[in-house]
Amino acid sequence: MNAIVSPRRIAIIGGGIAGLAAANRLRELDPSCDLTLFEASSRLGGSLWTERRDEFLIEHGADSFITNVPWGVDLCRRLGLADDLVGTSENGRQAFVVRRGRLCPIPDGFMLMAPSKFWPIVKTPILSPIGKLRLAWEYFVPRRREENGHDESLASFVCRRLGREAFDRLVQPLVAGIYTADPEKLSLAATLPRFQVMEREYGSLIRATLQQRHSKPAGTSSNGPASGARYGMFVTPRAGLSSVVNVIAARLGPGAIQTNAIVRAITRIENRWLLNNGNLAAETRPTKPKLGNTNGHDGEASPSPSAKLKPIEFDALVVATPAPVASQLLANAEPTLAADLAGIEYAGAVVVSMAFDRKQILHSLDGFGFVVPAIERRQILSASFSSVKFPGRAPADKILIRTFVGGACQRELCNLDDSELERLVTEELTDLIGLTGQPLWTTIARWSNSMPQYHVGHLDRIDRIEARVACAPGLALAGSAYRGVGIPHAIHSGEQAAEAILKSYHAVL
Image (cartoon, rainbow, N blue to C red; front, top):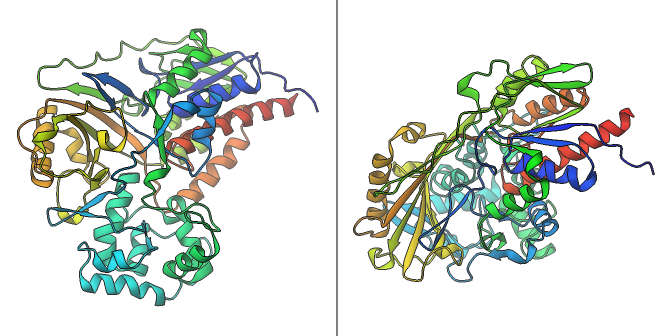
């Protein structure tokens, strides 16, 4: 077996978890490679951003990752963080959905689109008797006739199989909590293909669930782990997700990382890549969240002005930015690829973190949070009871709640100022969980255009993108824009990009 020969120089553009995973994997496979990671802001980690404040531990972005795919846990193991991972609290492993202003438990065993237990569906107040009968009728709904190249929206699939009420009251809010997307546009094949396979193989989601329960261990199926509210499958480092970022940064060393460094354009000269100061439209630059604090606390300082980079040549390049930014960067070097990247739309959200005395909240908080159906016409998407969900997030007599606002269907709310957002969230929590008084403090993180939207036709677009990348020696893409939005998928994307870079370079030699 021939040893891998290192490229003289490799650049990674983007210091989110995908870019960091790519850099870490390159160092693991070839410690001698000359590696430079460029991050446009002053902070590494992207949506992994932990802050300690007044004995609270706050996650301003993602707060955990799922373990039914291996890439997140595997990276933590290789970083020496495996023993630091903690799971969700044993008590209260349930969540709620809002129904006419009340928090109702999501039926036990409801796997996002398919009930694995029937008695909880019979008892739930979330659905009307007619809605329950229509959901049960799914067993008899004929499978869709196969059509070559057909992609169906998630809303179309769920309404066709489970009925409109089940979609409006259960599926839509649960999916919104994952993708912050418009389900009328969301591609089923790109987001939840397991249910498409269940219909094709069994003719019914209920029939598939029943047969898989009898043939496989709980939580698994012939098509992979079960979907839904798998509260025990989520883990996070005890000190927060920034632990992962910090360990990777320490491994790479300061010489390999440039922050406040906006790469403005990329040019290809034969098989080499030139990073330079071309014109990158301001509205498509990497958008990092702005952190605001109210109640008299000062906000975090804005990143310093970006450092203008002198043109530098690299043998290989990993672009780990949001797709619109990658499109602008590659517009001259790869115009066809750039056009497809530009077609991937994004939505944003705001995370409003608030601290309370426990006595300020009347609700029992016997769950990890709640989701809000769009049909309720409220101004929040969901709320997570962070200090209930994970240990060590707040002092014993305090509560930390993270509330999510915006998404693809309420984009205008992301533009409200901090005081309006605090007022809006306080009013919603007062109505829904019996909040009294004002928060002890509020922190607001704005994630503009941070969530890729996997619209119908997404997989065809990704196939074209990957085919074009394969024809560009020394180029790889990484991030959540392509084949998975969770932390483990972003890690996997970065590691695959690193492996592809080394493999292609070795093949050339």
